[in-house]
Length: 377
Image 1 (cartoon, one colour):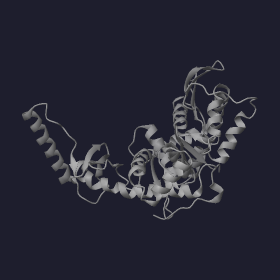
Image 2 (image 1 turned 180 degrees about the vertical axis):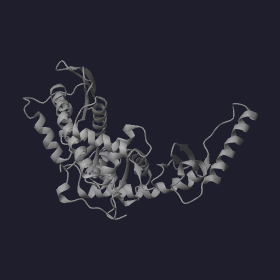
Image 3 (image 1 turned 90 degrees about the vertical axis):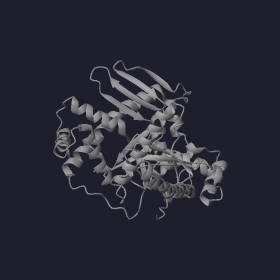
Image 4 (image 1 turned 60 degrees about the vertical axis):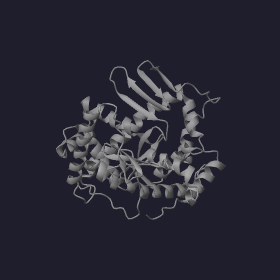
């Protein structure tokens, strides 16, 4: 996989380009390492691999079902004291099949690798970080693991800081994040997916509603400034926050005569007599007492939009039957290109997927969840 260097303009206060490149290489290694899960799944979770591998998995599905019946029969004959241990793959790996994937744990070393079908090049951030924790203890002879460990020690950093570095790589579009929170390293040869269904009218309508929500989001930002500016200060002064984002956050509280003291992590109540607020770990959700309009902001770049907040708000607009030409365009598209899906929310997620694939909208991330960014057209 080709290296994707970060530009000097992207240099952060807390992250050097060299460290970001180290993290990128650690991710690339993990993507290679997680391939070991695939052959284990052929044996122990073959159904999840349908369409993901060239092997005809039906015989493996039948073999797994036969083993399952034999296990049930053994338990029935020998009683409830029979230990139902996890299956062992390749004599060395304890195998825990789950959903679309599988978790392998090495019996001797304790190394843990986890992967979900179908994309073998996709990875989950939490699973990568779990594996990196193990490597930092056991594989310091690897040059990138050593560099990561050395940087963490020199900067008194923990694994949460490495997660912030991944968020930075996502902001820089070196790592691409998807709606299901899986990620992929961006390949310079990657081609855009087919977006023939996306007309200019639909794209313009969607971006108009994004802009509208960003304007509505200002209400929640004002609530946070009044109720919990300490969260905003904390994010703005984090040395690992993007400089331009930090500057926009600082602008929100620069009028304060003194910096606020940190408060409780969870707070609820009524704001300005008409909004119910729910503040949880730097995320604020406002709900209008009469209209039930809900607006959410996860303390981040004020120019970005909270992904969960936007999708829920758009559904609220559909359900409240607002007569807006841009809503009508989007709603028409959702029904015209349903592809057999009756759930309007699922269609909306598909539309967003097409827009992100076409790089019209970019998904980003902070510690609280997904964000949406775009360039006004």
